[in-house]
Length: 516
Image (cartoon, rainbow, N blue to C red; front, top):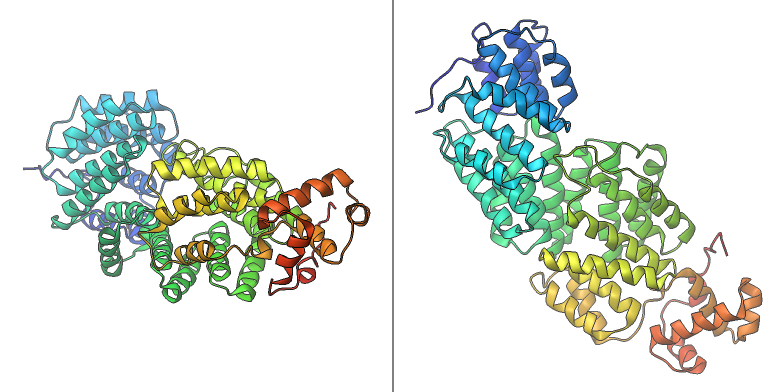
């Protein structure tokens, strides 16, 4: 049995412990507010650690009184963890090892120390040490500790690109928490967030239903604000893929109200813009894109290190349809961002993140008329998403590559990848593409649309080149590419195909390229 050790002999911590496990961080702050006692300082450090304020932990514990008692052991564990999370791995592990010399199995600090040992090893890519430390936690009598061990094992599975094992470990963590008399809701929210993300990406329909049930039952306290926002957004994407677009719009709107920062708000507007665009609501899509663009222009992106910076790529992707110069500005802004400074999130080392980047960049480059760069980026994204079994994302890559190459094998690959989501707009678009050879004019880069407009008026190559300020060689190349795009062999055939388009091509050339 785990011993009921009173962690803070002079700090009445019963309510604090309950509030910490409930992730009610506002109440935790109230309980420790103004406390300058050593045990109160330790409690504050624990709270700051859960709030990911690791430098605050270091500041509060660095001058902590040195003694040989239990408070010194607690100080070593939590200061060591904070040092590890801020990349001072050696100093952090040294303090934790010193604490372990005074700890025994069954002590709550003993399990804390081994968890942080595993976390520091994981951040250093030392997975064997991480697994050994996690094995200690799995022997704990406390289901909360065993749940945290399974979450750690899910991180290791992530690093090994074993996504299905990652899902299995996260479900085991939830099972442990379900069996706890006093479950740690912070851990539940953490596990739920990652599972919801994976349900967004993979055909995990049963898991998604479990996530939704827990989501509806979980008391979303102040300490779970980010998790509440993210899970809401991910479940909206699940609805979208299942073909329930109305529910998806509602959940995306709810996520926008929960957004913890303006950077996240940009991505929420873009979620709605993409869904509206893909379901034929062009006016609403333009409205949401405008809102996102206005916010994106006034906020700083320099210190953003998480998924929210993907907003810059989506902005580039959407603006590339009508304003290539603006799209290029967003791409350049994204490329200027530094890598993540938070090792725990490993934003820069996860190949899936590289896939997200490559897809958006590839689509934007296609719209900008750089077919070769676009194909290279989309091929890279396709390979990554195929490796991780991210089917619908792989399908989108294949559709982009079909658009760029007109190789129908990509269309068949897209159809296979989207099969688990037969009611999605992606499946409908792939089906329509297989049934028709008509190329939507809005998918043609603006520079080539200008050529098409003049060609339709009967202009010769030399006249087109003169009017557009391009060389005859450039115009010939663009026409050759357009022949391939529309699967025709002559100017006459191309004009005939254009005459069947519903939208007049001249209406699609109003927004001239600024660099033309």
